Image 1 (tube, helix red, strand yellow):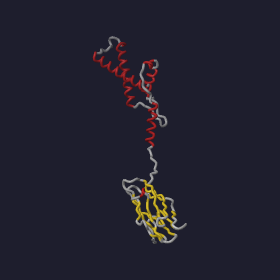
Image 2: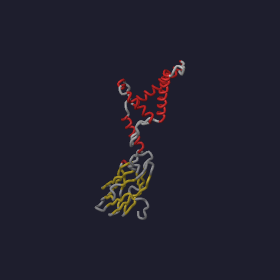
Image 3: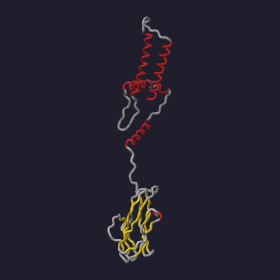
Length: 249
């Protein structure tokens, strides 16, 4: 078939150039990039250096039903274009590998070349940098988080930690972040709660001492209900403070 060829030529097959019924391929292999549900028409050029002859085109088992030749037994004078249709079903594989065979000399000589049908997904999987940092920071927190234990052996250095904790709670002097690491900080609401608890404890202790220090003429009367309320507030504040000290320790 002579004339202008508008379709893409994927392979050039040369016959009878080296010897009678010899078969050569211009390309060692071809790739037809298709997605599932896609279809493409291409051509194979047959160039004959010998006497006019018939050739036969076929495919391997992997490509049966996926590549169809419009003429599978063309008669080649000098040059002949053989059209073919490649398709991948919608639910088919994304990558199929097989061979296209050329048979010459009425079955006496047969050769094939590899065909890759489909697309190879070479794009590397990307992870957001923020997600990677979040995982790293979570691992660091888990490895650095102290184990909280309350036992009587802490009574010896309890006063030092108590004073240090009071100083931190009022000044906000908890460890700051360094580089990419994130430390466990006490939020503003927690500091406010601590300040209120400390203030309540100090207020109740101050009122307790005033009750005994003031002269009899200036002493104030405290009813049972008020005493009970002050006791509850004092125990609540002290419990909260002690729990925070245990967590920080």
